[in-house]
Length: 237
Image (tube, rainbow, N blue to C red; front, side, top):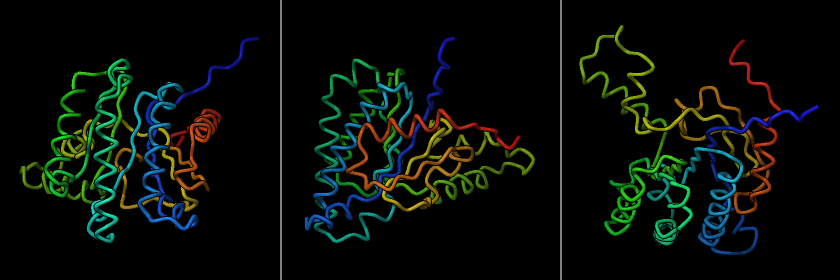
């Protein structure tokens, strides 16, 4: 008898919580946790493709993160973004596997000009790719995304009976993002934050890990996907 085929989620989204706590537990500055988290992120991006996940979304920062955190930490976080996205732009794997990178959120309103140019160039460089999709959410809030969508619909003069799931989706910042099959949150807190991808996670399976994000390695992702494959998705039936 042949073994059953494992069900791999098409789209995995990750809320990477715990970088600062990881650093604090080791007596390090907060941005050292962000640096370790960035290393983990690179490992997970590669592992997701190896597992057959076609779309991966990673929440990098909320709309308020840079405003509320100490200035030095915010500067270091922007430095880490610059380094990581420059490395990603130069990745041969990105080209070989035809990975399209999308940067979603209000980052154009908050980030310095050099970093904005880097992110814009990365999006344009991969715009024609259709092998895999890699979404980064920077200066993003799901609540803000939904409010902006509703305002857009109201401003368009659309009649109530004309409002559909499709018309709402078209005006979201996340309009091009597929429904999330598996939403993972690290850091030991079993809750969601700021309405992250609230439209796309309506039918998601949830996986909460006790591990702080720097410790959520490729094997941890594989375990989460394996658990997903054993679950039954009933969609309210």
